[in-house]
Amino acid sequence: MRCITPAKTLELERLLDSTGTVSVVVHTHPDGDAAGSGLALCSFLSHFRALDCRLILPDATPSSLDFLTAGAPVLDASVRPDEARRRIEASDLLFLLDLSRLDRSGALEESLRRSPAPKVLIDHHPGPEEGIFSLAFSETECSSTCEVLFYLLLSLKDCDGDAGKLPQACREALLTGLTTDTNNFANSVFPDTLRMVSALLEAGTDRDAILEQLYRKDREERVRAFAWLISERLFITPEGVACIIVDAATRDRLDLRDGETEGLVNIPLQIDRVKLSLLLREEEGQFRVSARSKRGWSARKLAQDSFNGGGHEMAAGGKLRWPEDIASPAEAESYVRRVTARFLHEADAGQP
Ligand code: 5GP
Ligand code: MN
Image 1 (tube, protein in one colour):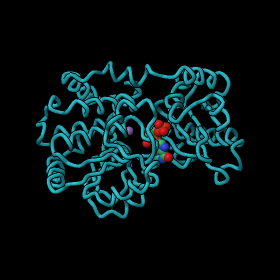
Image 2 (cartoon, protein in one colour):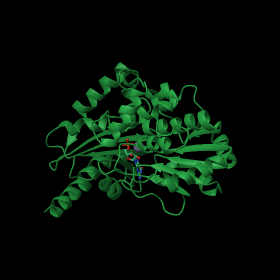
Image 3 (tube, protein in one colour):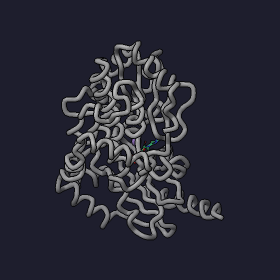
């Protein structure tokens, strides 16, 4: 992997050799890649280096990841904000994972900016923030942060290139993040991604057990809610933009819990004429937006231009606020229709 050079690996070894208290911070609404990479790193550092390492989550992970976080050294800053702040202050080394900018760490941003500790970035998003990271391992041509981390860990002296030496919890967390960020191998799969999976399987990692936890333990209400939302709430614009809006009342009526709309945004992309898919869900007085696109259209650009966000080329996110962006939640559909029509007309005009 191009971002991992011998000089940078050596610098990381030097930082690890001179540290005692380490904290790992990931993006808000942590997904499998954020939580998986964070836990994999903590597992590695406590196993090989006996370091005091904690994963600080800006807020909770969805319950589908309980199997990973149960019993792990995790601190949820939305539940214990003071402890999270004190922990960052007490850390002499900080890792930032699965985010490219500190503002993606939510309420932890200020403590992170204030900390004089060296900050190491491990990530796969475009455009890492300048001037903040002492060391950055950032690569966009890969599946996930877990993939960058896997090759970085193998480059350290502890496993000497042998994935079989990684602790089991570390291997499971890495494979979990790779699996969720590729949508179970549907996108962002590169030759090195499959080489990583081969090495993890050869080392005895139980992929079936991970799939069982991730995809075969849904509540019945969730599956029925997906079916209802697709049947009753999905609209597709003449330009080929699919959108589902889940307001707070609908979410409560369907009994959808935190994180349970994960994956819904991908389903409309199965439809031939759909180029882009959006999911808007009302949370804390705004809509959180998920955007996915087929090849040739940029979910990232749409999220950046119209939804105060960003992300990967074909998987991005952001937010839609009122009164800043729309007058009231009821205006969300007309806003989506208007901005996406303009966006696709401009994209079409730009095509050769
Ligand atoms: P999701 O739709 O799964 O929440 O997010 C998809 C991708 O978009 C993730 O890689 C995530 O990091 C990115 N993303 C989600 N929300 C935001 C946001 O508010 N700002 C930026 N810059 N990226 C986001
Ligand atoms: Mn990721």
